[in-house]
Amino acid sequence: MAKLKKRFVCRECGFVSPKWMGRCTECGAWNSLEEETEMKSVKPAKSPEHGSYSRPKRLSEIDFTEEDRMPVGDRELDRVLGGGIVPGSMVLLGGDPGIGKSTLLLQTVEQVGRRGQKVLYVSGEESEKQLKMRADRMKVANENILFMAEINVPYILDTILKEKPELVIIDSIQTMYSPDIQSAPGSVTQIRDNAAALLQLAKKENIAVILVGHVTKDGNLAGPRVLEHMVDTVLYFEGDRFHSYRVLRAVKNRFGSTNEIGIFEMAPAGLLPVSNPSEAMLRSRPKNTCGSVVVPVMEGTRPLLIELQGLAASSSYGNPRRMAKGLDYNRMVLLMAVMEKRLGIMLQDQDAYVNLVGGVRADEPALDLGTVAALYSSFRNFEVPGDMIVFGEVGLTGEVRSVQYAENRVLEAARLGFKKCILPKGSINPKKLDKNTYDQIRGIELYPVENISQALSILGK
Image 1 (cartoon, rainbow, N blue to C red):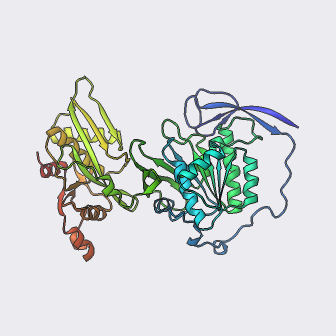
Image 2: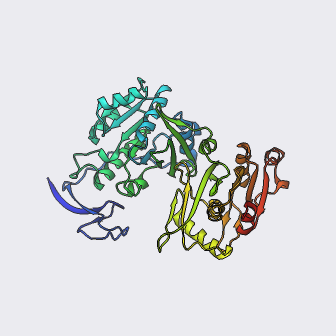
Image 3: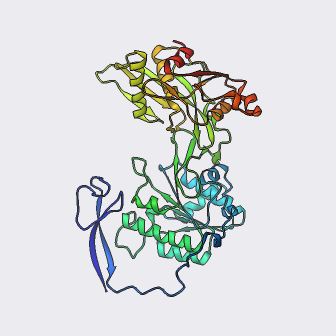
């Protein structure tokens, strides 16, 4: 015997309320509570049989080696995952529509299948014929890969238990449906409960599962926030569809670092890993141009040289416009206030625009000095040398502070042929460098500075 029970679930945090409210009391989101009807059985559940629980173990009794990871064969994806997929883990991959999520996963299952590992690809958005067309276009033809167009979760779970694959792809979790839950596919309850069922199976059978998740117009993963807490790894596939480069970024990883990124280039044959991202990003950069500065940023252990462009133009309206693409808008406004106070220049009647070229997004203090240099170069209309890089954190008093991994940033610039570098004073001590590092850095001229006035005087006024 069963009874129907109405409730309201917040689509942002999963909070359950017996009545509708305009604002969620848990996360504070407005108009986020959705009505759902849940069918619950009044019959008491049976106790599980003996032996169905796992027994407590000491750490010394648990067998684990680094070789237990499953390398996917893609250098960039393996880097972001920390060396490969851990069996029994669940990975959530999100990104804008058309950014290349399904393309990346098809390439992944092809490479995993080549090593003799069994893969099950479940699609709830495409039919079997559509999967066949896309696989043929990408030349995916491996007998170890099983494709299935299905949204019924209990049937999918039975298929996984029957086929015993080592990797399962669910594309996407928002389309999955369980008939035991009285709500539509994509609802908070469906997403949460179906993900929990897949997670339980993955842990019990030691099967790696990758879920594809939709994103909202704000760029966040759709569905309850609790979904990100349930999975082991959360990946975002970013990029501008009008640019060929894509960035894979980890925002959560229980088995590795969240600082690493993977860079791909979208080509007719699929996504190609970019072996030298700095050179690729600067390939079409105009040299000796006003408002253009090269800044080195660190993405995990990888230094990346990016072109930062700034534009300051007289405003035609009372309120000047401010726009930042690829970096923090509030940080740009703060740096403009520092420039007005410490340099004595008036930017109140100037429209200001800052852009990281190539659709890349970065958020670290080392961009501060480059942002100041780009805006000042455009405001004073002077050219920045094309063989110079600039980096450093700028404080509210106009001082330039040190940043981490200064040697790695300079080494990357020297490798690509840059000859000059403006950096915070004390960032690099040549006496403490080993001979190999010193020989590589010696070819680039360093300009240590203490404040933004010194840095801009080197650039030219």
